[in-house]
Length: 110
Image (cartoon, rainbow, N blue to C red):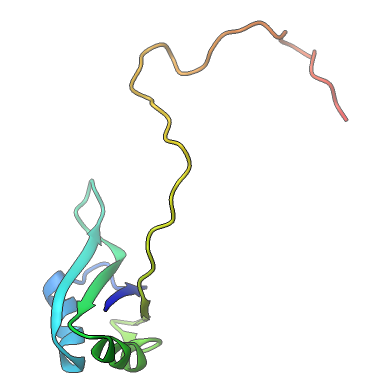
């Protein structure tokens, strides 16, 4: 069972995350989401427990519990929602088209 773990301390490591969940069952995987630039925790991650029973035990024990001064959010992970169409910002040209349409005070106000 894959669990979402939120409101984590920014100083936590993946090893800390494993150790936090280990008393509640076998941790198959622990992944901490990191900031791309700083490589620091983004405050959430995912833990995979080896069974649904162990996952539920971890949710019951840790959801709302204070860890490093923060109340954890622990629940079953849901699939990521599809995002809207991606825009391509790689082309050159300044980003905005310079079509007509008037300038100044030609906008209508309602």
